[in-house]
Image (cartoon, rainbow, N blue to C red; front, top):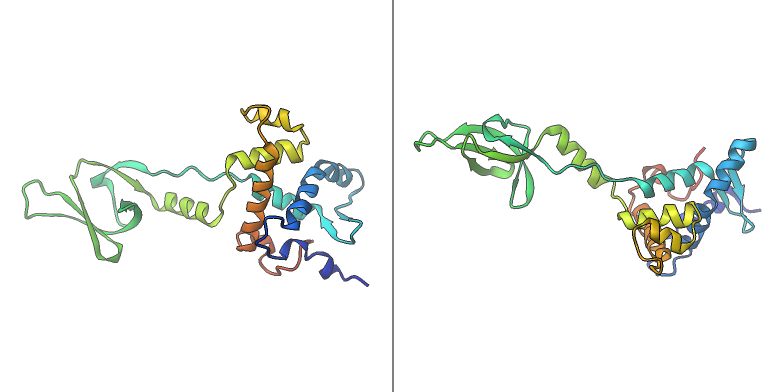
Length: 218
């Protein structure tokens, strides 16, 4: 007798192959997501068993779709007057955001530039009235959130939504994406599904973190 645990291992078989069978499974689930939603609204069904015996949960599919559609929070830094900076803020040094641990003026020079003591014993100087691109503690947390929750490229998201979930013809989906009708939108969708599964394998989808073998979580 096939166990529930065995039925739900399909998304957790790592594969480096370009023909990863999980991509086809996920494509089918997204193509039938609207019908699955309707079924759930009609009679409360939230699990469906495929002819292969695998059990799919609507909640897990919705979670995967939401993860596929997530857009990054726009955090590029804010221009602030140097003298308004304080410990806890971040400034860029060699392309890396570095924490300000201390602020003081250099009294050895007439201009008295502002000296920022940064993490890892680094130092950066600015004129007190200079405009400095910086991050507040809250902005840094949002930036870290983006890194912890990678997003699919916009084109891949559009292809998944239009071509798979909304089931538009490939040519119509391409036009809605601002592309030529002959553009192979299906390839964007496939690349997006492959990327989504890679994020899952790398542990970026917390819903599956506790027990990697389980697909459905009630």
